Image 1 (cartoon, rainbow, N blue to C red):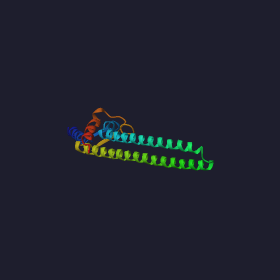
Image 2: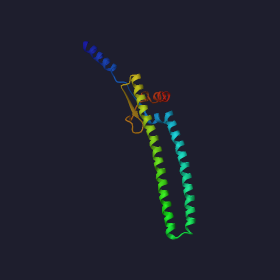
Image 3: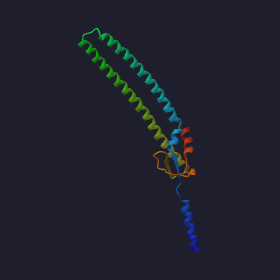
Image 4: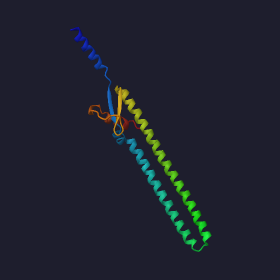
Length: 167
């Protein structure tokens, strides 16, 4: 009888000390993030503005090239070649400037997204501590959860927390 009681006490003690584990579908979390949507909209607007600027500069360059081509017909071959060389250099310079500007825009967007990811990670950690979780695993594409029962899926709760704590 003492052995049965001892076994029951051990089982109960072990059951009480089990870790509380949940997981978050990080892909779905980011898809539902209001802040991510705002960042994407902001950079879509900047990208559209940049594309208009690039198109305008390209159009002006094409007009300049046509004018030089028309003018070159009345020039000596060496003078025309000089004009074409200058035009080519100018075109390369404009192309490099636009490429740098586009890269800066992309880098700024990536920095904001990386900052958002770090912020969401901290919020998940805070949520886990507040709710008494020992582990919260990341699921979704490339996540560490290959299967999890729905009752352990914390994604919707974390989405609410992330979207309510927009700073």
